[in-house]
Image 1: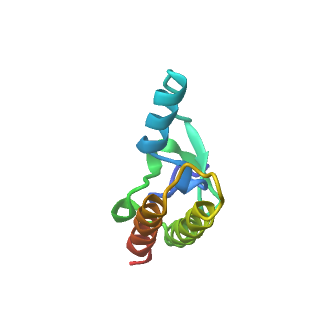
Image 2: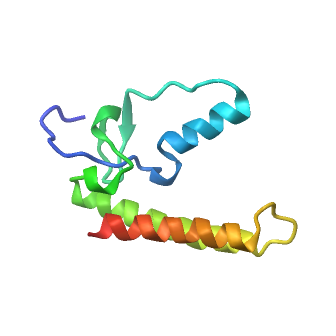
Length: 111
């Protein structure tokens, strides 16, 4: 972990990071998980959690932006594949909406 790194990064598991995931855990399990103090980033560094953001406009590390771009595109493809599995509790419209959200976010990371 570098104390002199001025960049804002994304977590390595960027699709699983952020308030929405924490809210899902709270509503499912009934407890609030602690935020980690140090995380591994998309560029491979370990930085304080406070030096990360899931918001594309805040991320200044170019390697992390590229990582997040690729991860969101991968997630969009995965959601579309899941929607084709019989018995999945995800309608085609819900899958399309989630995939579009991920692609829009990926596009914001590529700017």
